[in-house]
Length: 52
Image (cartoon, rainbow, N blue to C red):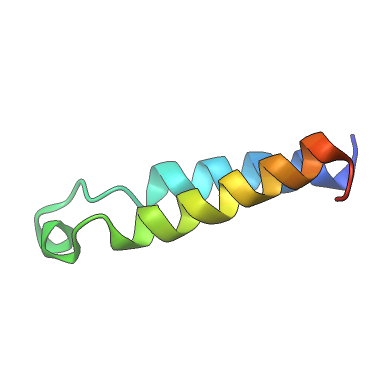
């Protein structure tokens, strides 16, 4: 497996884990998952264009 595939899988798992599901984290809004989502989209675009 290439390193980029492993990195994308780890970021998807972090994105799922950072969703505000618990009562104490609902006040955070979608900030943490939004940041991880943006990083994931950037890495996907870099992987698809072959620059990663």
